[in-house]
Image (cartoon, rainbow, N blue to C red; front, side):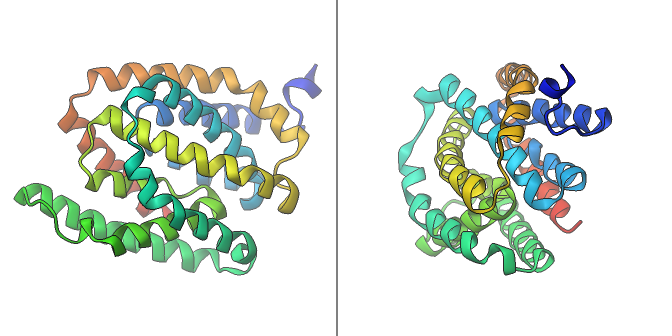
Length: 252
């Protein structure tokens, strides 16, 4: 029985923390966007960087599916189409160069870029300014490339893509649905790479993902309920704070 519930044969504290991470993934994907960034350092500490990315990826896919089913009528494809080609290029580059890139240098560069862009967005919100550099093609191109690279290296593209969607000032349900559709496309494409090239997804990790799926679904239902009671302005502020904290976490 233990082999079924705990296929990686880790200690039960590690198993329990992984269950908590599945629950957090559900909350994040269906409502509190970006909250699951805390899973990345936790799982990396427990399993190592490459292995943790393979464990986390199916959780992200399950969460994306749930969010897309719930909010599918609110999804806006036009925002996805601007980023998708560049994100695919970023994933391709990361697939073949990810093993040779300094993790610290990459994380620091991404974190600084996110914080600078976030500061400008906050300034624009305070001044109630519209337009500017966030509507330029180079902005979506650079976020697409860096986001694709970051999502392949460590499932860490959340703050980058959320930042882009925040500049579009989307209603909260459209924000969730559009992000879920975009992440689902990218995350599904990453599965063969993790399974057959990096070997970070195995039958044992997939079994663990399905064992912990009820925890993820519980989190997803909770996240869905929370979204309904949070006002639009408060939700936007929450996502801005989470993006900022996520960027700061990349330094550590």
